[in-house]
Every structure is written in structure tokens, then in C-alpha cells.
Amino acid sequence: MTKFDELCQAYATSRKNYFDYRNACHDFISRLVKKIIKYLEIPEEQVKVIPLSEEIKDQCDYSISQAMHLDEDTFWHIGIQITLYEQPDIVPHQPVLIWLMAKKNDDSFLVKLGPGSKDFMIRPNEEKDYIHFIDNVFLSIKDSFELELQHFLEGEEKTRRIGFQ
Image (tube, rainbow, N blue to C red; front, side, top):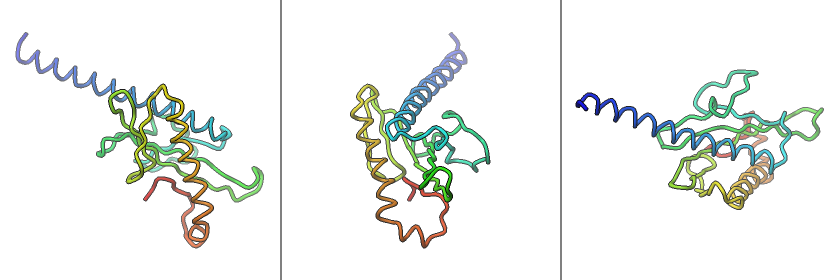
């Protein structure tokens, strides 16, 4: 094997490692998003995933792989937007944006609800780890409405952002 062949092999190995890592994170994030939707009993038409790294295109349905991106902080980032309402056929409807961050850590995943937030370790085969994190998501959204309503009403923000600083 020539030195050049060794360089090509190192490049191929590096790409394989990256794609293996990306696929593992993609599969985990897909599973986590599905579990959030199911556990919170969010109707399908009231939830979508969106990218956090680019301008959101109107009327565009993003897949998990289209919406997630790897940031300089070494976490994969993705947005989940749910739309809340008092009654389905009565406006206003309130979009809520949840900022999820995840990265693989040995046999588990480190998950955060936005930059600077508490770390959660989720083992892929431990349902209680998912539930613990999703309960935190639920309480963060609920508390945002219950404890910060006046601040929200005085602001101009159109989307509630859970996980944003």
C-alpha cells in the first residue's frame, strides 16, 4: 500500500465514522421526537420539525434529516414546533418552538432543551430516561405559559421558544 493509498484509506474511514455517528444521532432524534409527540398526545397536524440553522420556508414540511444540523458546540440541533389553541377552530393559535440538542456519548445520548439548559442522559433502551426528559419538556412549556404570561403579553414575540435564551 502506498502512502497515498493510506491517506485515501484514512479519508474513507473518517467519512464512514462521521456517517455512522450522524445516522446514530438521526435515529435517536427521530425516536425522541416520535416519543415526545406520542407522550404529549400532540395531534399530527399540530406538530412539525423545523431547522434552526436557516430561514424556515413557508408551507414546507421538513424531514428530521432536513431539519437537524451539527453545530460548533458538537450537538445536533433541531426544532419541534407545536401549535396550541383554546379550541381548534378558534384563533389565535400559538406556535411553540422547542429547541432540542443531542449528541452521542458512548452508549447513551446527551440531550438538552436549548443552549445553557440542564443536561439529560438518555439510554436508548431505557423508557424511563425518555419519560424523564419529556416530562421536563412538558413542564417547561406549561411553566412558560403559567409563570410568564404577563411578560409574553407585553412582548412582540409571535412564537413561544422553549429552550431559547
